[in-house]
Length: 288
Image (cartoon, rainbow, N blue to C red; front, side):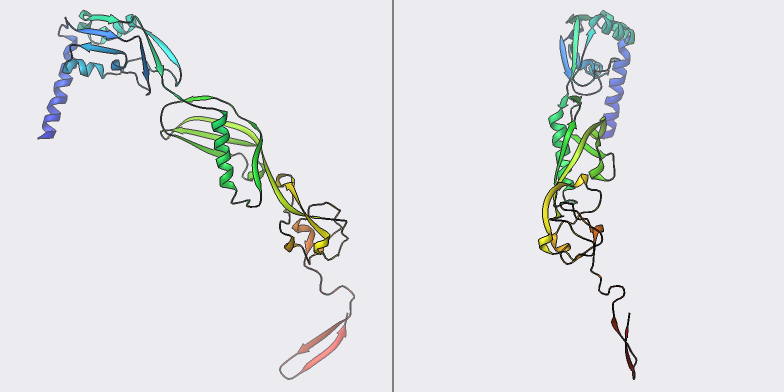
């Protein structure tokens, strides 16, 4: 029953629009506004004009999209009424008999929301917060940020995806930002910045010779930028105490895991006691 009613209503509206080209419309008035503000990507006749008297046919006409696209977000265009009359009269010939009133020039502005350097910085800071779990001992920040903007975007929910240029987060100096509005990518741009990761690491307090067993007195903790360190540094002093230096380490040098090892138990040329055992026999001898 409802389906049949909607079908008949749609047919009636279609017939009404079709008759615009054949039925005189004397007494019909189209009044144009001097300005309109739209948020979508389609401009409707109802955005810029009203039609009296209000009928089913006039309501259907007002819902028609015009040949003119709205401007980009935040921009403005001007439409001449004479051009609209020419277009509509050509599409609906008998409409030329209607009365055309109102503004001769219609200004259409596209609504917009803006993101600027402050929003871009905040977005990157939130991205850094998500990376802190990978570097729990580091104070992460972006330095020398070169941010473009501001940008005008369509109205709608904004989502910004941050993609570092380098898979090694600490080595990247460029970030790509994909800006989506209503799920659609509206802006794609890059910003340049360096990552700074200030981290407390273990350093040596004085020169260390090769083979020396490290004690707590040989070590200290210094805050350095992890980005500038090539080798994996020792973060916790307990990881170094009791280890043996694999090479000479200069005073103040950051202690890397590659510079230390477990101490050697038996040195070359050292006399040792060798024991061989079986279920019923045990043999012991000295050897080198």
